[in-house]
Image (cartoon, rainbow, N blue to C red):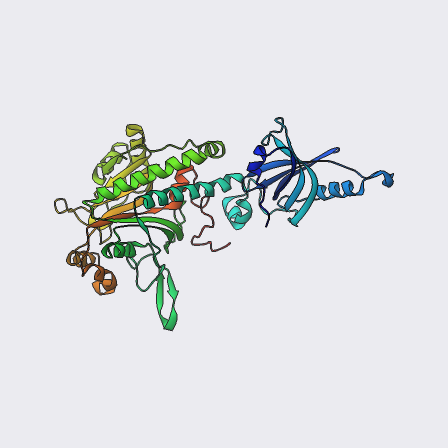
Length: 446
């Protein structure tokens, strides 16, 4: 396979013969000239053809030129092709200051002339035809940002000697509770469960002596929510570390991680994000603000909002209100909400012996929760009692409790939703927009 010339490389090439491949974005067929905008994964370039039209004196027509004109005139948006032609530099050309005079076209696959979506199509319609929706430059950028974000996080961890794991997504028993689980028929009339998170296996790595681990992988929740921030399949960003003193060690690691990753996004894509999303990427300063949950509830109440929840947690509007307070008071987009009551936390969250509250936090980004983090309880006798308090049968958790019967270090970690981070970073209103192929209660295709 010969090496392709990408659109973004054209400006640095000398004038002369060139070949570029991509898909047709627009065709303007004028009387004396034809213009085609060809786009590839790196940008768009203008193609030009001096049109040759049929005349009464067919003998005077250049048959090859006439055929090219007719081919271009019939091109449908979305047609994939390769153009061979002459590259010219002209600062008057708004599209990158270069254009290609067409010599020959090789059509790889013609598109249907009638496209099923338009610029004003609704979100559900665009999701039905996601492969076409993703051809937009704006959507292409989303996944370049995602790539940079993930690479920066991996680099942060790898440079600090973390081990990357790939935990199983088929489990013999529920991962955390009996709620929100997808059941899967398994061999010999067995039932498997799709993992809600890698939580138990992250902790197994700690008792295995791995020390510091991370994973970026799918997770599944059988949650019939139709909100803008929920999905039944999502990418979870997880980390777990040993020999911590409290959840504060986890929080410090996560804020450093996010600062590093967002800085990488700003450096590589900041200008284009501003152009296409109207968002000025803000690299967060350290440390992030920290507010105990009880204090956060008082702040929200003082702002005139009464949280309807009876379990003591914040609701989405409460999260927005505390984020507004943090923005006004600290000029910050992030805030850790800490010190949750055990009733609203998982059984494996360690509790502070003085307050009885859990050593845990939620991290809010622009008013939306993106993370739950905690120090884990590593003493098996305490774990058993806390599981019973939650109404869980310790026998059903034997495989997990076994991890702690042979010694375990103090440890903790977090799980973070990648799509939520992307949504908030780019100022989008729904994770559907920033998920490659969204899965929800009513969507399993494409």
